[in-house]
Length: 541
Image (cartoon, rainbow, N blue to C red; front, side, top):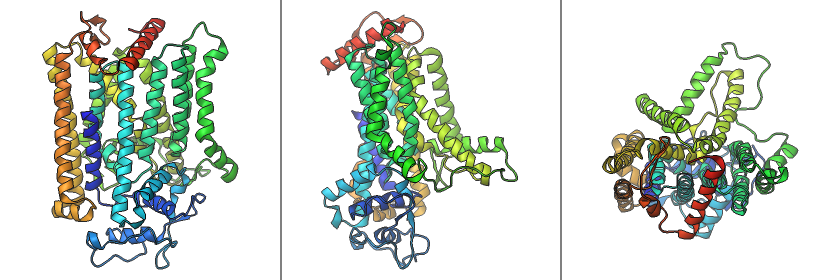
């Protein structure tokens, strides 16, 4: 619980550190929410306008839309405008297109309904932005809970789950992006929930009713993911392939029985969310419109160089995963390289040493296909223009549970064979290390975005009072310290029954196993039974 509170409070803190409506896409995401609150509906792609209220909010935030004048003096918080009634298609003759209608409306509709139910029609624009950001924080926090549950399911260890989720603290960009008004936040929720149900299906007894229920659940979540944004299309083949493997692990079953998990999931996904993309093909002749265009010219631009594209695209993908959002926040190269090296080493360690590598490989299909999807589109644009577009690490955040699972399994391989005191020290220091990266990230963002004007300017720009931000900051540090202490304490007092993953050695007692499963006997006993059956059928230990 402490690690979830740590992540939630850090997300909330990032939502304050980032100036309102100052990033590239947040104004458009916010505009779509505002338009729905005004009853503006969900027009076809490339036809939705920026409404007058968004223009006014951008002016008063000190980030006026191109073509509209900047204010001589920004209003104090109590003087800022209520913008829900301002529903004209532009301001002073200036028009702009809201591109977010290229996505399904799910995230925007949920946020609009929630803000309206809370009385948001009478709020100032800064209060609306803060409220929408907090809804994003809630979505992501729920996704973290699912990721935590998925890791515990695969590893049968609460301690490994804590370590894995704590590793998310070492991805500052995760907090930088997902603390804003963005549909990526809802994608993280449904993506993490989908990983959880897939993990349950993969570790349940082959052919059992529970396995079929988990398969159907993964299909339902896939359907919701498809109703969130286009990059989630990459999750569809991942779910189908994963559940085909699940079905074919029943060697004595008939062919229809083997195909049943994948069939149930695919049917649920098409009914719930797949229809949106079929509709796009039938109505608009394409899956999703793109601001950077689609297709490529007959011949490439004059200085076309495939190696240059691979180098620039891979560099941008890595930077924008760990800590870079355009030119507003760009971590030093040494930090990005260090974090990347540690993660790649963890991947190699898991693939070589962990008996759960097959689960990691299957779950990694979705993020790998996402990389392939965005890279192909970016290459088409590069071929025609020489520009690199659409390569963003945030597209991988819906699969953050896979990243956390790799961290947890790598930790098991490295740390579990140690003696009790060494394991406790390693566990505590691991969490402290991730907290260090998190502190560095938020302080780097604060200095980059506020510079010499500092704390007072940040508070003046926010809808939060200074006292709330101070309590949030102290609470986050306290939750982080509690997480580190909990990890060390658990490692020190749960030394038995821990398999040294990949070594074939096992300690003599079941102390950790009994401790790990304390708290939810019915569910966990069933899980233990499922894992045992899985291991017997597959030869895994």
